[in-house]
Image (cartoon, rainbow, N blue to C red; front, side, top):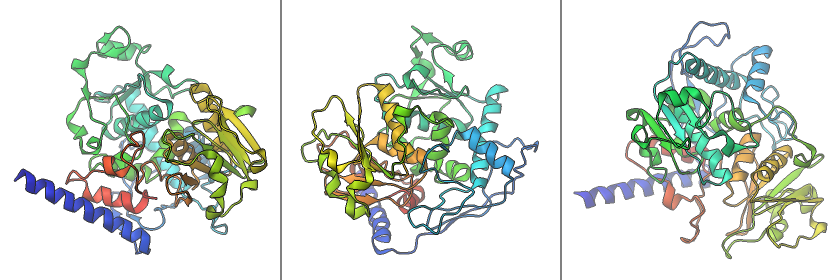
Length: 452
């Protein structure tokens, strides 16, 4: 019987993945899924305290669903400021302006959706202040790399808002980023210490916490049955969009732009970055990670592939580090890597230190500042730069030697093309995309909208 179940699951997975890929390859019409809910008054003076605001007949189609209801200018401005959206970026996607006339730029999210999302987050904040939450989510980022920390806290806030829980982490692990006050500090916050035993001021007593798996089974966890959740390791950023428990709530409140909305709320800034972290007059910024595996292309070859994405290397700036590159011709370069770039290929070549978190934050802001982002195959920092900016970008596939156009800004946290088995550092579908049986519908929608 167990063998039969394994075979059945494998068959379902193959059919689902092939179905999703075939729709994309052949351009078939995407599945239209309607989420129906009760109407909700989005007036900021409303006394309706419902935490999760339902979407009224929001249809999921092609392109990404855009629910464009009326919202006042004052509500729009409040939401943009509250969410700390990167209005300083040349690639900022203005919710109030429709850029359909330019095929390279189109509005991915409406002002109504931003206001709805900000209202949901504000309601959660009020629940925290009034101590109406139940349990907590502890994001334990000890010994994690910086890009993985971003994804872990993103998962934490998705769970905290969806399940009405406190969110706790080590604030100093994210410096120089300043986290919102709604995120409790595991070391310094008195409220947390009063509610839970703390051992050596470094970690919660494990008797009070349930560590959830963040491997391929992450999206299969029944989070509703766990009072106090600990996330102790990382997973691919958009994995909870394939959870049958969390994904419907996230889509209802944030659409497919949870990374853009919640990411900027957590890590964003309304203020323009300092000059060394901001690239002026740059059309394209290229992220250049030096690959760990010899089979991947070095960033020194990236300029050979740009024409496939519709631009030339003389348009670019490269930001090179073992993490990043930019183009109008600028490149970001890692001080720890001995790589020789030809200045003639880029307008600028910028250097960052991948072993210094302050430098990586600077690099992240430099990428976001450009009009278009070209990220490196497998880079989580590149994913977050594109997701936080909110405009579709590109990536260099260093295995297949191509430049790939993304459909929207929220794609590319999981790689679905062929990847050698020894690329253990890379989030790829063979090891991470998993069907539990209950999440088939959510997984199919992921293939429709977040597969590149």
